[in-house]
Image (cartoon, rainbow, N blue to C red; front, top):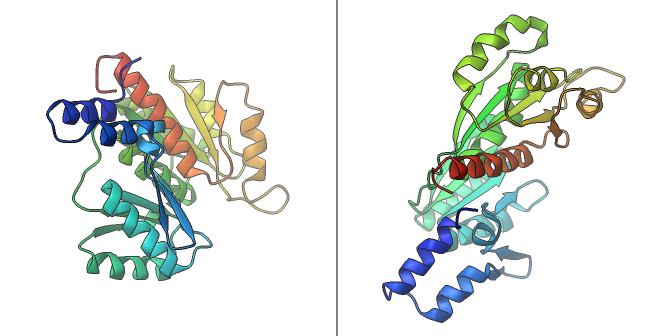
Length: 263
């Protein structure tokens, strides 16, 4: 298995005298915690321990608390991703981040806010393809895209190519065939992931989306359909763009490492 790139960087810093043995060991252990007031405990070692960034779910959080969590995490780690943010939360975070010289990028289509102190994601060579059945699925696909990009992957997308006009799928797949993994988002009856899995020789992750009428609507029929797929796919929960993006990035990064790219 390729060595963890972050660990290599830490060991290089220690070798060059840029950090002490104790500092290097603390980071490599991946158990760095930082408390924010009485309301949060930041996991600053996740990227070293698990190979993925700490992502903050904004739903249900007080805007003031969320602002402090996001900015403190950015100051400690270089970047922070907040998912499912509301416009009110975005306004609070952006104002507080500006006062601390932290830049922000709001990706409204995916309801994601990315904070940075200037540090960029490290490219891994992993390639993730993301496909949606309809335009209503794009919000979930965009969340997955941002997470995969934050984990160093190149992401290729093809939106609105579902089973209702299946002829749209084949030209969309052509430029994606070198991807290490496919994410396929679909609502209603959730057919598309099984179709894609029957056409490509790479892992496919199905994401049911909360779109659909009446009985078994709001993603339930799509989830049931994907779980019963006769094609081999993995399935995440309804609207779980973050989970799909992070899992796909792990697969892609492993695939890139096995092919001689970055781990």
